[in-house]
Amino acid sequence: MAKNNETISAESLSAQALSQYTPPFSHRGGYIFDADHNMVADQSGDDHLLRIRGWGRLGKLENGGDVQDEIGDLIAKLLTKHWGKDQ
Image (cartoon, rainbow, N blue to C red):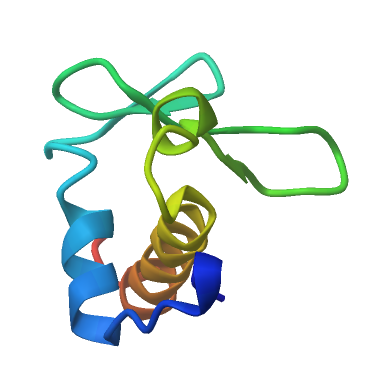
């Protein structure tokens, strides 16, 4: 939900989320980084596949929580679309 009852279009939120990281992405030592070495996600333990990271940067955005949730949604969509198909 947007802060201060602001309405954010799904397209605008998706564009803002996509602008936070730069491909290509890499996986090193349990962490996923973008091309600019920003941490995107990490392995959080036995009970979770990964955690969306970047709150230090995203928390400074007016709607950082919404952007972080959208990044998680985008990652889930990509996993669903490509899991096991690009091998």
